[in-house]
Image (cartoon, rainbow, N blue to C red; front, side, top):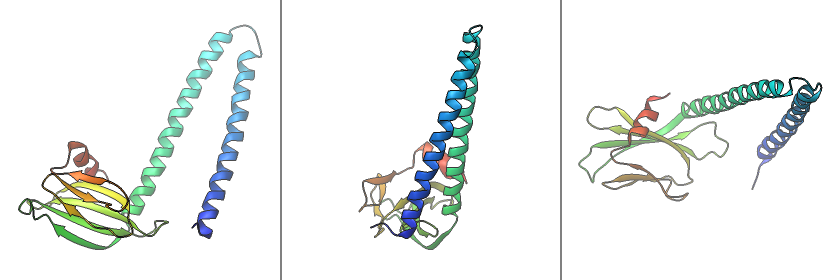
Length: 168
């Protein structure tokens, strides 16, 4: 069931999408007018506008992903009520830290961090939503979000997991 804040967020999203679509339509028609207004050099103007549009799209994608990542970093930094588990099936090579995240809209967002027991380095990090968080250890993986789906981190973590763990 959606609460009052959920409806407000949905309305804000719909209004933002309508404004964005109106703005996009206006700019698109201005572009077509610029290209087809005069017969001479239409191809040159069309190629120039294609270059401008591609630059705009790249900037928008970078800004959207950057803002999304910044919000995710802010959310992950508000971890609390953490507890740690040690892997037992492999002789204690890994420690997993499971924390609740403050500021999420659902209230059940968790942060999982996997550390090396040997040197304490961070090997992998995940965020997920689960009402009843539980970790399941195997020799090949650590499972999380058991109720919400089939989610796991391979043991040892992949090079991509290790690279992502180094980011803020």
